[in-house]
Length: 372
Image (tube, rainbow, N blue to C red; front, top):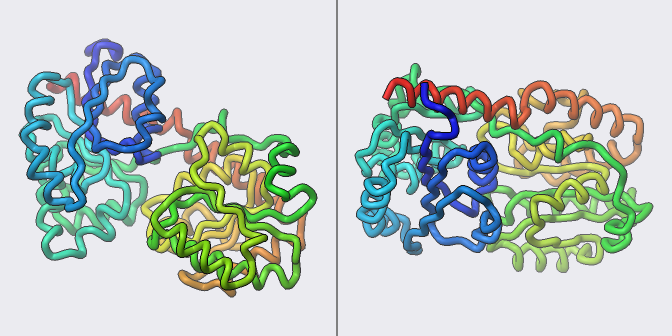
């Protein structure tokens, strides 16, 4: 079997994707020879300090089909020059098609959720996703319902493995509240609800914002902290203004990953109103690892992680009133918040530990390398 430090891994993954960055960082830190192909992104700053990684940026076009047609030649050339031990694709959409068309094997795909649950609904795109799944030598995902969906799309069940993205439980852990940060955000001695999803329609921040006026009736000093960027930011800010809650809503923008634990530890409740997730969202899992109670939409695999009334609450999609009711219930009961938070920490340590999950894929890499 090859020495792990000698393996040469080539990824096609978006710099902007947090899941991909964390996944690849594990193998960078373990001294693998890493070659990373990505569409251009402002998130290049996230990896500029990484050692032992060679980054190749493709051309980026607004039309996704052009990202395939006009980049496939460069991708083939790069892979031929790199001659990796294996090629790993993060996200089965554009990246998956580029990987499948490269002709390289062994070829692995990690599905992220919307690439399987949403994208194939288009009759034009569905055949491309099926093509990617058929070509892949190994497929990973983080939820059983996602695995079953891929099988219905033609994936060979024996090729699909469930690997969670995982949470770094050393970095994301319970701790003291950051009083300086709380003072800066004007939430010192005030209730604080936090969400860290992208400001895109799929994450339905509108429902959370519409829930806040109902929360303020019981807790007029409560604040909603919204961390993340997205093209819906201006619309959501206008909505908060129209609802008269802009002074209680903090649009924090992009938060560096190393800073996120400070924000989570300084809040009381984490909320995710996503309309679609594969397994548990990384931001929800990170909040749980920091000991926060959570309120999340009842979708996908969330019910496998959140037992309603035991470690958090599940709410229907697009239901501001239900969201508000559960937030108010938790804000009124500190003991329940503490109990839920302690339970959540244990769940993540036992079932979604980053190092354990990445160790699983590391072993799969070794198996594939030895077979090829």
